[in-house]
Image 1: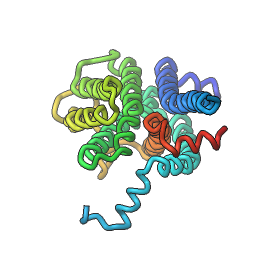
Image 2: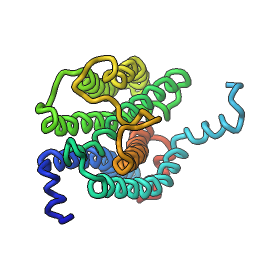
Image 3: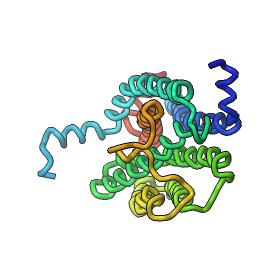
Length: 55
Length: 253
């Protein structure tokens, strides 16, 4: 099977690939979001701690 | 709880202490990620490349490899949430509260994916994006239940009482789960009945079935990874002023 016919998906490319795309986006978002939020939180806490120490 | 053997209750006590759980999650996540990626790769390769074209639906049926696992997970995660809600209500276990609320966005994501991929599959096969049939409607209600849990938790300032409210909501909403599952049997619907769970003789060919099961297990591992990541964040948020968080900050600095 060629790549071309693989991407063509028997004529259903317009349905199959968006379905996989949406799934990838949603699942990735639920993984990346908490990790990113945690980094933000750590940064905030570190700043707070520094302030508390310098007082 | 005298009916629980001492080593078991000690194990739960230790695991459920936030710093211990946090460290445990950190240790497990790389392994879970490796298993997830392997299963995902094998499932996608099998489903999109190896599995033959369906004689009725052509290649459009390949949406099944994400649609069905996502739909299964949307129910599974909800049941997990309800169990955590029960534990949180009875034993006031903080970790159960954290796991409940951490599961909600992941379950909502799976439900959303099941609805959207179903719609993208329905258009070429049924000729419509959406019908108000029992399966689709009850799944949509499930999405609203998840969103309800998320917004109720966000609306209540005190996180302990928020968790109690959310636990009750999660438990009440569990009546929707059997309705979703049996909707295709109870009502005459456009949505097709189960093909896989008839374990005696699944009406799906083995080369199509194996990738589907691989994807289903992959999604289970994804849930574990995502819920641990979300739980780590929720624990940190709740315990910013505790000693173990301060120690961790100092180590990172």
